[in-house]
Length: 110
Length: 116
Image (cartoon, rainbow over all chains, first blue to last red; front, side, top):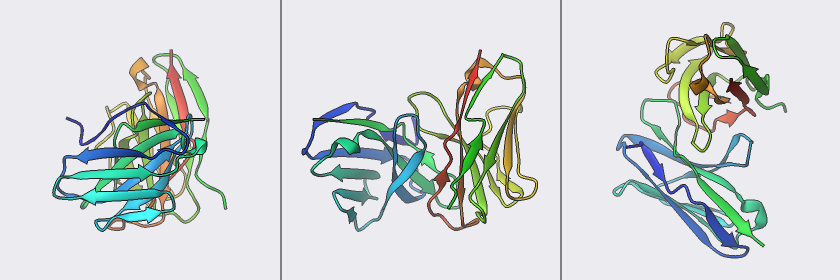
């Protein structure tokens, strides 16, 4: 079983819709959580960190549920430019490396 | 300012050849990471440097893989006797903090290695 699991999709969503992704992690020692975005044939880029209290950045909202060990990302009023692969990422206590999920592919349809 | 750069961007190697992949991190960044990304997968950790010290190489898949960062800046990932299963994108990332500080890792564009 992978340490970070995501639904690979693809998610094909009409422009303006709301879309949500979930991700689960297996290591209870995980201490930091992130969503990275990766465009086709490009490098991953940090979208947002995820905090226990939940956090919002414009149209994007991230939530963390430590008890159930899952992380979510909500995108409201989706734009064509949101089309990308969204990578769920965790970092474990005492370890500098990032552990990535396989990514969820999102396509926004005009 | 300049981001993380990697070279070459594309490399085609015949099976059995040795390859060397270069990473120039963001100036002043203490930590440097190498990841391997296979098609349709997320990046997988290979190794981590804090300055010139290689603190974690647990992700290197075999002893054919070797990484160094002799002066604490530029890093090279070397793969000896390449195999087809080595075909992937090799990503380098750097971050400004050292051990104990988790913050954003900035990724380079990657080197796409194809072994034929």
